[in-house]
Length: 262
Length: 262
Image (cartoon, rainbow over all chains, first blue to last red; front, side):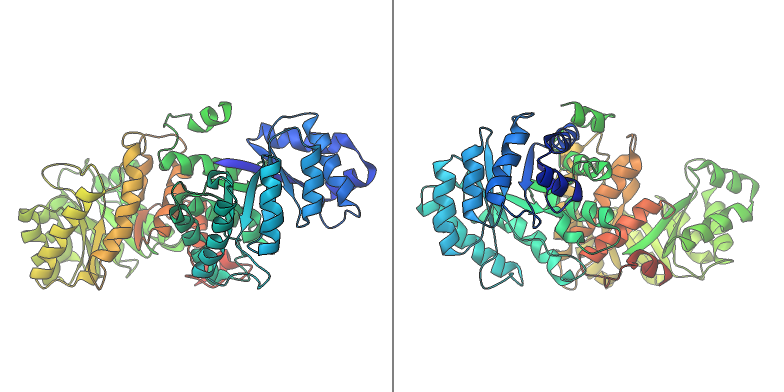
C-alpha cells in the first residue's frame, strides 16, 4: 500500500497558521512525523483559507523538500496552482487531481507528461457526483481513454472512485468498493487505485473506527494507495494486518514491528 | 450477522472445571455474558478434556437452556455425541458439524432432519484439508448435493470453508475469502456461510487484531455467521461498523449503541 499522508492541509489550523506566518518549522515537523509513521508520500494542500495558493503551494513544496525527498502530492482543483507547484518541485510528484471533464483532462494530462508527474483521476465530472458503480466506471473509461490517447502511461494513473461519507450516501459505499475492484480490470496493465479515506467518515462520530473498517475492505478490493492520516496508529496497524492476511507481507510474530522497520 | 458465542468450550479452563465439577453457575454465567454482548446463539463443546462427552454435552445443553432460549450449536466430531445433545435440547439447534465425507453426511443429514436442526457443513474430508478455493468448492458441492438429494433445506445449511491460521497457511486466506463469496452463488437459494473465526489467529500474537481484520474482509465477502468471542468489544464494534458500511444497518451517529440496544 502506497500511503500518502494527508495532514499538510490548510484546512487544519496548524497548517493554516503556518501558511499565514510562513512558519517552515510547523510544516516540516508535520512532514517528518507522517514519514516516521509510514507515509510514502505527502499530500500538500493550501486549503480554503489560503488567499494566494499560487504562492502558497510552491512555498509548501519548497518547505517540505528541504527535509525529505519523498514524493509530493500537489492538491488543488486549479490547474494553474498545480503548475506552480510542479515548477517548484525537485521531488517526484503526483497531481491531485483531474476530473473526467475534457477541459481538465486536456490541461492536466499534458502537464503531468511535461513534468513527469503521476496523476490522480477522480471519477467525477461537471454533471456531479456519480450515483453508482456504473457511472464511476463510465467516468473512469473517459479518463483512461484520454490518458491512453495522449500517450500517458496508464501505470502512472491513479483512479479515485470518489469516496462519499457513510452518513450521507450509505447505499453507495458498497458500490465504491466494487468500483475499486473493477477499475483494476478495465485495462491491462491496470491503472492504480486510490481513495481519500477520511471522506468516508466526514461528519460522523467514531471516525477512526469507520476509517479503518472501510480501509480494510478497500484493501481486500484491491486498493493500491490511500490518502490518510498515517499518525492514526490503529489505522496503520489494521492496514498492515490487512496486507498480511492477503499474503502481501510474510508472517512473523512481530509482523507489525517488522513492517514498520522496513 | 448471526453471532455464535464460542466460549462454552472445554478447552477453556473455566469450562473444563465446570464440566468436571458439574458446576452450572460457571456455564450459565458464561452463557449470559455472551448473550448480553450480542451472541445470537451459543456453541457448546466439551473439548478434549471431557472423558464422557455422551453425558457432558447433554449436561451443557440442559444447563444453558435453564437460562436462555437462544439456539444452541452442538459441537462435536462424533455423531453419537451430537445425537445425545439433540435429545436433550428444547431450544433450536445447529449441528456443528458434518464434513464432506459420505459416511458422515449419511448420518448427520438425517439427524438434522429428524431433530429439525440446522447443520454446519465444513469443506474438509478424510483426504485432508483443502489446499485452495477450488478444492473447497468441490467439497461444498458434495455437501450441497447430499443435502439436496436428502430433502434437507439448503437455507438451513451453513457452509464453512475451514479457516486456517495465517501463521501456517498464509497463502490460503485470500482463497478462503473468495470461497465465502462463491459459496453464496453455488445454488439459488443460497446456502448460508459460516466461519470459526479464531482459527485465523491460532498461535499468532496480535490475535484480536488479526481476528477483526479478517472478519471485516469476510463480512465484505458475504459472510452470514461466525463462531467468535462476543466479549471482544473491539471485534463486535468493527463487525457492527462493517455491516453499517455495507448498508445492512441504517446510519445514525450512535449506531454502535443503537445496534447493541436492538
